[in-house]
Image (cartoon, rainbow, N blue to C red; front, side, top):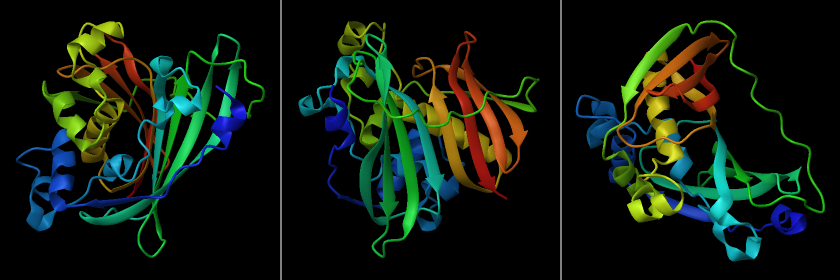
Length: 273
């Protein structure tokens, strides 16, 4: 991987037209059900904020051989979402991505690529910004490096203020892939075994969407920000525990599996109440 190649990577401006059916499909894929009429009934439909994570996105651009990245060793490590206006339940949005940081960890230690994607409407109004970090474990020892962006603070060193629970549906991965991420790692057992897992993994963004859904139901208000670090694998059917700490304008959070492994760490969900 070459620093200059990645830092100057050019992304086309993308157009994404989506329908109410697309929004309903996304809401179902992150766990909304028959009792959540505002999210599954087209007559009074609401787009959940994390829908922005799958709209007008450049997708797995790090898999392009021209990047020089060892894609087999690349993992989605962190995700942030900033909402500046409510997402319409249907319409047309435009996405413009850019690489903001290429951070070298050193030879044989990997590198981190941070990219942003701005979602705007036809008038140019900024609706949302998504920020993604990819840890390229098979790269490192680059010719240059950017300073690392600030990290989320550690979670409070005290008992959580609230604890929520959810069980991920057994069909979560096969349903979520219909929102755009068709990586066979999430559906094909043979591909999963070749990657060192005994069964297909759940998409990290599906886990994040599921957790955001239960947090929003607990807190109330309009979500304005969401951020978390992906710290351990998650599988469809897993039971998760979500710990919350009250913060100014939102909650800090983490999600743990039934084994106690922290699967989402240093999370924060901001709300306008």
